[in-house]
Length: 255
Image (cartoon, rainbow, N blue to C red):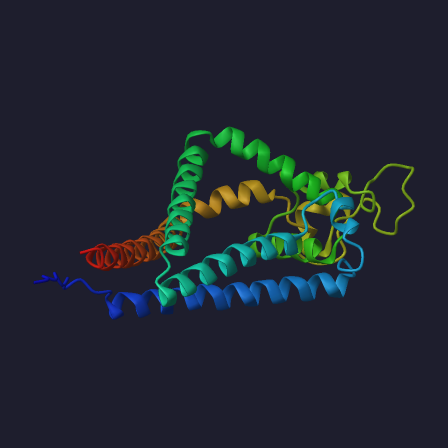
């Protein structure tokens, strides 16, 4: 006589399709980011000459868009397929990556708080390197202009920082029409004359503006950080729960 043992364990359809829905948003967002990034590179001719990215001394904002798109697309794909196919490897990859990103975000926030002077110096170097490349990339130019207009600031620590750019440099060797000037996004009204800077352009640097913006909007920043963290924790919970269900079902099949 043969005896069989049946397991009552089963994979929860609720968690399975909730995780799928959670990840389809990531996947679609990744597709949008990748599409926008590739379109922007196509418009700038980068796709036909990728060395343009390496020749840029500052940062191309499109690179950041593409990096975010790749991460979101990969995670969304792993989560969707892992949930539908009940693939433990893909689910563990998704869960592990989300955990890694969560702790990286936490570490960056803590280190930025503990080493504020170092962060401020690095940000100044970063901002100044992008000032030098202001006219080299249209997306970088738009990003800096948006930052300066939104915060009513100019340069990293003041308008003098724009002397770092060859087009705005005030030395005698420059023949640019923009010599001794600043970008339009620095202007209160036009024109920006050096003798009347206090009346014509923003004289506050963007680093000071951002340092002043953060305390005024600390609750918004904290709310965004908490919302992102909760979404990540929710995704980790769904993935871990589904993995446990799948492992329980597989363990039951061995009896």
